[in-house]
Length: 561
Image (cartoon, rainbow, N blue to C red; front, side, top):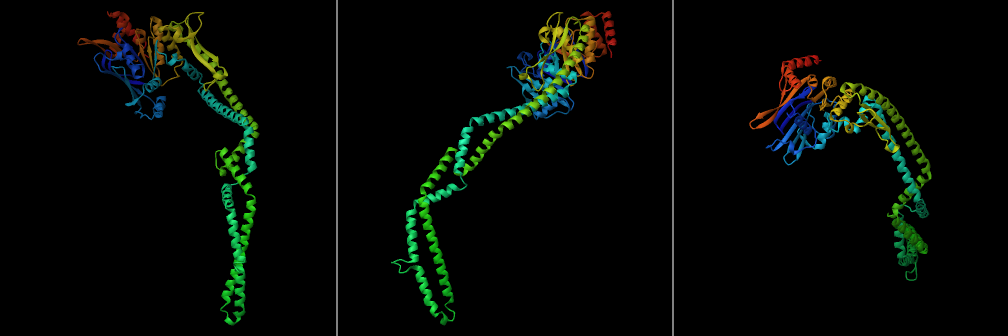
């Protein structure tokens, strides 16, 4: 609830500090005393539109601070936590400054914020009901939530929102799969051709390097063959070598073998070495022969090797990769083709899941709609009972519920909801803000608030012009309903009616006072005797009579709870 309001340099107010309590607070005063200035100042702190005309003449700027006491579960705390703002100790202080050039600054708990955030917080803390106030009950976007709370259907509404989110997620997944499959099918010919090319070549990991090495070798094949042939000639002998290495080794061994027995074993290591040399020489000759044979064989396949090498390089270029990456490309193409082949079954499964999610949402939303329609009847009847005492007996209130087309369904269900009124018999109901006059509108909103009093226990309510154009029993009915509404919450009402003023749990009187050559607005909290005098003034005017004082006493005593 609002616990204090500090105003500096706003219109006729130079400095004013007010404290507030729970229950019904009435603000009275003569016309022009400055009651509207208090509401304008409060609106400034709540983030409403700023006007440089609010600044007191001669002052450099105006400022207003409104302090609110909130419980730990108040939704305003969630906004503070969401934005990482430091919470106060059970209090939220909204402050606004307004400079002469029209620029304003906003603060929450002395931390700078945007005006839009101030307004967002203000909407959770205070609701001002008046002829020109288009939020709260006059905001048709909020009517659905009010009806859901009246219906006790918050759990159904939450379930509908969750079912909506689940349906949209499934539908989105199905849509994405459908688009992917359609795209894949449009590219199917290309995919199969590309996969076929890769399958025909069957590239192997590391093959590019192998082929590159083979090509390099084959480009030098003629020189290699000549060198290998010359080496083989030196090993196995030729005309110039006189028998070759093998013959020389064999002849050396025969010579040593003849005298080995007479050397007492000293030639055995030499003979063994010669044996090894002969074996190695034979192995070298075999290897040289193999190389020669391979070179001759590969030379005959050079065209084939070149063809494969360049085919692999071209395919890699086509797929914007290297030859080693072709295997992964093939795997990807194969997977996409497999998805095409099995895509119908997968798509059908996703479609079934989306359809089931839609049915689940529809079931939840239809239950919510049924609860709303039932609650709408009870709400209309309850408001209708409140209207005659408020001099609105010829008026009619209705909760209009329209079924939405499927394209307009949403997390809030299948319904468009609006509170409508008709002020004359036979007239078509319409939006409250367009049909009712200022006084009628305030009383309609009061009737609605009384019926929906459990909907928003955390917000302070401010009523302006609620008693416009009424008196007597009607004013008494307004006061009685305001007092009833103030049970367990804070209600502030600006009133000219003594019947309403007498209902207050506490009473603030607004008046003008001369300060030098200037007038200044002052606010006084009245004690019981002062309250009686103020109610008497409201009854009789400037000349207060004893009869008016006696009547004021009876009003206050009759309305003491």
